[in-house]
Image (tube, rainbow, N blue to C red):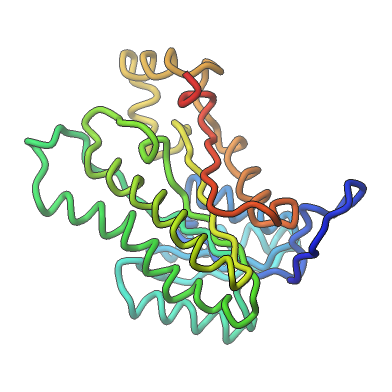
Length: 264
């Protein structure tokens, strides 16, 4: 995909991703799945990746059933060989990568620092931060010869503000924010845009225990100006925008999708 130097205000195809190839990590469920489906709906060929093959195949099948072009590829972002194999499969089948969505992430630990082990710290940093670095290094670099591409790193409000009992997670997402800004500087000369999306509390199967908790959920909701948690319908618009020609002059930015949490 070649991004035009200027976009007309009358251009109705700003969000058309036809002809692009997108890779979405952590795409088997939740936010990753919603983003993958939206990119497909806007015309992208999507390689959806993760560690659970059955779920990945189901997501890819859903996109194909709607007329999209999609493949499911098992890949663990903590392993160089997995990500390299993912790269080789996508390039071998589709020839190029235009959009990389680094969504794979975990948040399994809810405790203050004195109750955090080295193993818990390493696990979260390895997936959430080093995994993004690894995918940018092995997948994002394939965009350099084409002098074009969009990398979208999935961050969190925890990368912008402190959240109680979330030190490893906040550190990992803060790292993603800075990686995004620095890489945007490095790769601007190659025509590659690098941005982040910082989501607030979104209702998924992974957050259900928190958002439905009678006390914690109510307290968190009261902190959100829109007075509700995000839904999966609120998720993909930002990713489609950053992947598309509509964002052709946007790089090094973190787009907050948080119901106004960080505006207070």
